[in-house]
Length: 204
Image (cartoon, rainbow, N blue to C red):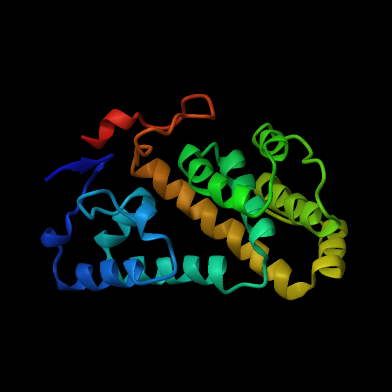
């Protein structure tokens, strides 16, 4: 069986019944199928690992779908938060996976460059800036101080703050999975955080 980092890279025809249900649910969801699989139908990124334990993998993918497509966070704010996680975790795969969505949501190249450098992002609305600051503080301190909490709760509301905390936790988990399983970058993507990601050649 072909390897994908540290794991077998499962082809659809190699899946057992439980794995196939997990696979079909993932591909039947709202995510773009073209970025989920390679030409042979094998799952890319962190999704391949979720086939190792389908009930848990299915629950994780359902949480991710709810956070991306069913939460109170708008597209622009969501991509800002996810990319803030990618920068903090030095996760090339997350960065490449979400830059296109950030561009579609209206983020400029200047803003993306600042975000990647960990610098203040120019031209953000107050709410987007606060969302970025909340994500950065959670990632740095594993907590939110009273002042930041009060400011975010007042500006964004508790439900949106809950969604941001959950989004940070989910994408931090994804970055951890990508790192542990040594998931290689997709062909054509280059490391942007100091070459910390496994080489593309590990896809063989």
